Length: 119
Length: 108
Image (cartoon, rainbow over all chains, first blue to last red; front, side, top):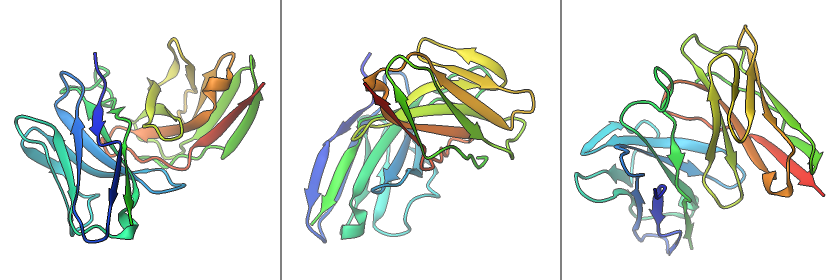
């Protein structure tokens, strides 16, 4: 059973270009989460999606960032007009439709991340 | 999510047991305690989750006292490959919030 897949693993962009990060959740998982980890910091929540729905995007920057999880295909995190401050590791996680533990918190399973470098 | 406090770093030797204590004084009634492990250049890996008393799996044990204001992750007989950052999270919300974690260094 394959885990969460992310591609590309490394992405280099010049300032002003667009970055598209892809995430395929684990089989049977319908919830996807995106996190950003800046150097020497912990992961910060960005957005929570279910198929064709954005549930919570409270952690997303107001401009240039968008996310989608279409009915078919991977979830996409899109960063337009990248700036140097966008350089970070972006992690995707997925969870099953109903929590990993009965009545408990949904366990999130993380992908290997995409390391974005903006030159 | 409840705020958690854990040591910044811990050193150990191969074969020893490592215990990492996390404080979560403001934990809510419905909050679960979850631990993740992260290696450099990798995503966090789920280790264990519990609500009260003791939980054990093939990787670790989690001890939670009755007041639930703290918890202790126990890693039995660590090896060099257990060198990683360990994160304690307390909550039920999907917005996982990772602090600085505890960097555990295992030496030969």
